[in-house]
Image 1 (cartoon, rainbow, N blue to C red):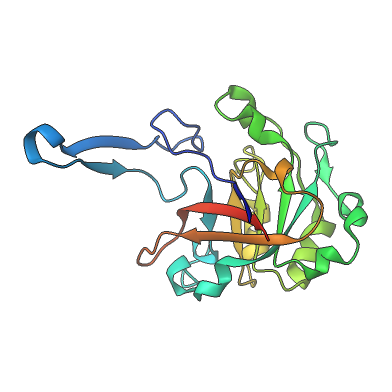
Image 2: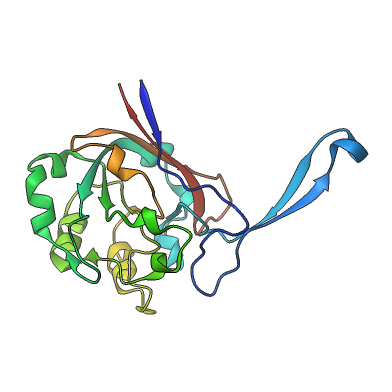
Length: 214
């Protein structure tokens, strides 16, 4: 079995969404003093490779802990969008090469090639985002989730979070951001899991996203 980790490492100097704080790691217990090591971690629920549920945008909607466990595992398909220039839209043209596989997938993962900018100012640049037609395809489909190797479903400049709101308005789905290594997943369907932490009333969570090939 081949396994690919699609998750960025959580560190104190990692990129975070503008306006939030980076994670903090504090020594709680040490080998020398306590005979074991334990660390206190402080971070936002939308840190690093993470997942949004509908409750991220709308009160009273589904939190991550309210989804059944099967929501976070299934067949995924990577859509190669690396030919797009900064600011260009992800359109149905990027979907066409994959034919019926688009409808057979549980998760659509969009590869912008943006993970190469992780840790630099360019990561916060004008990355491509899905257009209305691709959003319509997602909303009319039976997908468990979508994912991207950029910091947001919306451009950073869109403080209204227009695409987030459209996605979650009525749809029971999850949105994954800050994926990496999507270029290693090929052009066919593969097994994918993206389990969040089991947190009460959870508006978002870091995840460990993994692809595997039997």
